Image (cartoon, rainbow over all chains, first blue to last red; front, side, top):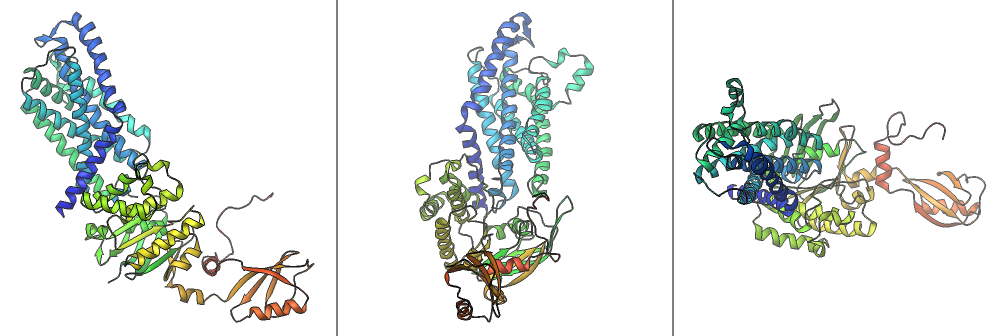
Length: 256
Length: 316
């Protein structure tokens, strides 16, 4: 059976990748434009007034966080919109009736989310070269954190897609949960600047670990060590993976 | 071993609606089987459970001896389904929709491509292979779903109203295609509201109403139970009242047209003779409805005579 599952996995993953690649003007370009504006406004205009942060120019400080933000939002958005679209137009049934274990469906969708997250991350990194010098302290940490983060938020997007019954449900979580957590995740500031109480509160935000470990990979310095950050990301991946599998096996949102 | 075996199947939805109240059904291998019932009778729920799109409440379902509870993957691999509603990504090209379905079933890419070409050609869609599915006509979309359902060569094919909204010429070509598929050994379960289609295609029939199986027999035995047939007669001259005929009940539809019930043992010669003696000349005649339709209405009629459907307002 495994060769058949492998073919099924490749089919779902390919379908998911083609889905966002065909509409690259809507999926790849907007994050690049948005990050350009961040660099111009926060990096150049305001950043020059702020001066250094954590021993580096402000524009260099925010660069890894902006790349990470693009990875997070795009991997999440890809899976939630694709899965909800498949539910809404009923073509999720193509996979439901086929002899595919749910784990293959899950991995196929997540692969699409990871590839989009990483593709956008690469484009945004290339855009950042216009504004900052290219320097990677640890390529391995950058790659591992980027892939794990994209994996985690693809799983989160899948859960959102499973529960979503309308287009509102697709946008509520990104707007009211994901964006605030991302902005408060230390992209634009070092959490050491916060009062002790808020520093502790910030440690409850998983995005803090992702942004800081990613910054470590690029710049070699961060508020939190990469080892702890990777353990935290893996923990959340495990929790969301189990949640996704449970929901798919129950048929929540897709099988009355 | 049956192609499909259903035992004591129940389904109660979360809102408390009991869609299936204990269905028992067996479909022989190689059969062309009609599953009929009025709207909301439970047919689509039953098909949904067989194809794993709906969770059952209780009961068992086996496809070629493989239970959907214990060997779901095996059971699914033997099953193909053409649903009532269009359920493909309408922005994807036709060829991709069919080939991807092959991929979902684990059919290697090369074979999937060859079969896609084969079925799209057979169903007259090959010239549209690069078009987005949303640009196809309704009939083409139905054929696309049939091609997609066949890509993994299922042994049991469920067709849920495959010819709905399709013109008669195309419907006839689809009947021929389905018949060929059945001749090649594929068991087919057909649901349709065109009872002429079921009568023409199917050897066995089950009728579901209000979640219960109320008939399960061969088409020929069911049709034998029909004890009268209604004919519409178009007359040469106007008449004022319906003629009284011995052994036939008549009803006047308009001065040129009458409706006559011909009992099973009645003779059309006798009918024409009696009309002749009353100087009534028949120009043309036709069956009012097909035989299965007549039976279907009788079998699913509500005891108090109430009919489902649109009710005219009182002040009409």
